Figure: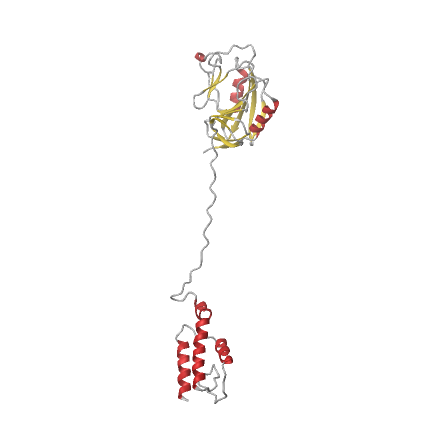
Length: 296
């Protein structure tokens, strides 16, 4: 049976050329499908029990093994050897999703009717001030907001954000200079200077808290008969040496003086006796919702 041995040797040699032997279940499945004639058993391949066949059957067996191996080669040869030399063993890596970029909060613009939203005010001191503005208010620069009717009499209003460095000694004449000694740095220092100033018509202070920071409110009401100079009723200079003043008889100014971790923030709220109550309520809501934080 040299022909039997040759055929079997060829098949076996072909199988052993790969990186692994053809699995037992594949050989068994092929052999089960081939017609056979009982012959003498051979024992030289302990792992298999082949039966003797005629030459054409043997050649068919060889061809069948080749076909099955070709069809199932990926499952039985390539797949168990992922990572072997010459095979692609890369694993797709998920592409990281970029983190969303925060949109910068805009400063209060100058001269524009504003859409409702949050804006950044500049008080000229190291304090961050974020203000939620209702729709229809007007920007007056990054430190000034006007109500929906503007700031002029008889029904306007505003909010000014700032600080106080020096208080005018005479609100009707800048030539008289500033209070001497200068006003101290605390909330109480400024409140005391306002209340004791001979030219300031003020009311007693009330306590207030904004965004967790304590302070006081002082109201000034300019007399209806007061003759106001062309350059206004002088109040003080801010941290940038800019003059602040009132400008209308009967004008009402509420000063909010807040201590933000040692920085004195001053808000000036102008209005008039004829400013609508609903506008004043909206302005109060804006002040109550201010977000404050000290800056480095």
